[in-house]
Image (cartoon, rainbow, N blue to C red):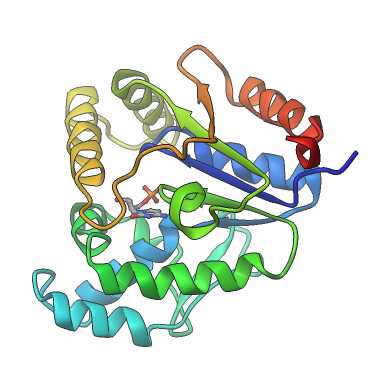
Length: 230
Ligand code: DC
């Protein structure tokens, strides 16, 4: 039996796909790339360099010259990986509210997507990988061996985020979180270049009533099906 070499996990914002993919990749010994961090790194650089987010030409040019590296090196401060933008550690900075507010716009630009898609395909060519995002199964790696699309209701995702923030001792407002998630869903769905729909051959996984561990177990099982015969 052959295990799938290339696994794509797409899904909505805060669906838990990154956490699940990180655990699954450890279990399988696969490389793991969360492509959301690349769109976030470009957005961070746009804001950092004072480029106007609405200026598609300048934003695209910046994305084309920005070097993004995702590595497992870095300080043990709770980070799952380190993200470098032109050598600068932006692992935590890309999670800022300001970046969140502009990342959908930046990722709607065609040249930005082309630049990042090219890099993502290059990374996937290195070997066994789990790649996470919105358009991985449809656009980036349409020949992937196993495609997953993770879904959870906006309310459930807001509840998870709310609990996570409280757990970190940070202030949290459920209604605000829910509104932000719904707004991001709308923007992501309306992306003119890669509308974020599941691939026709993706396996849909609804996670509303499942724990992270249960989702990982479910995906592990899917990896044991002989994909060479499908
Ligand atoms: O998964 P995330 O929240 O870190 O993603 C951040 C943003 O990047 C989100 O607004 C959608 C965008 N994104 C994208 O356009 N294509 C991808 N493959 C991954 C993320």
